[in-house]
Image (cartoon, rainbow, N blue to C red):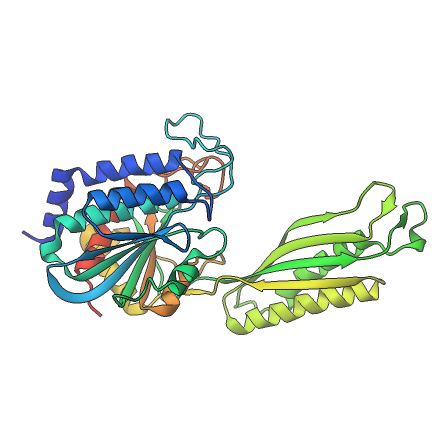
Length: 396
């Protein structure tokens, strides 16, 4: 019996796909925000214990690490799933698994990632006689906030035993279930977070010449910062400078003495990253000075770029082609300016991060981070089968 036939036979006999879908719905109903995934941690721990898989909980506060040891010596492969939800009020009233936690929902598919990894764990326990080496199951918190991957690495999850390679996936609603998206090299951008505090001098709105207008300074800064990408970044490169919040002023008839803005820089090239940091800082400080005010510029480096290992991508593509057919593999020709903290794992070990088709066919549900987000759950058994193949066929 071929490996795929063995996988499918066990999947069908043990109803692993159906059980994983039920788990995804439970996780969706019990959605928890980043750094607050205590119930999710407990659920994962119970599931692993029920499968006879030893695990440690409380890694990076709310993460879980399980270890499956195979029948023969070999490499140690890690599989990662992020477990946190988003601070969004769900508006999918028509589904019976909508979030029961007000203001929190799985609007990015992390519930599916977690269910898939639990399904892989169950399947691998049934196929341990085919497993060389060990598999570490990384259930990672706080992908949407503080970078839980970095904290898990700092607590030693890639050691004892030493991890040789890491696979990760993310549902993608621009692909259909049964389709896989892949990219060699850089897949996601680097990110920096900005806070710009603009200080002016207040006065009556009827006599603006007596003050320094922080709102006007902020408006000039916002406009000027857009020139950084259009005039300082090469057209063949890509970058984003976006401000998402602006707050300032007390009353309508007073010139504001303070405005605070927050935003992001997203870049693909390390040199462009340094350039944008410096240019945006200079624009903020000099614009404020020119208009009689001053600026406090704060930059917080965030996730680095996610760079796949080409040989690992080749393995995922070979496995996906065998499982799903060549026509269901789609090359991502350009990297995304989004970010993904799997980048921390990829910076430490050979790694591949790929996309798992999950489109519902309904535009209302296919926009990630929206209040109506959902997936076609038939992608879950596909993810289980492919990640299991990635483990059992691994060689580097």
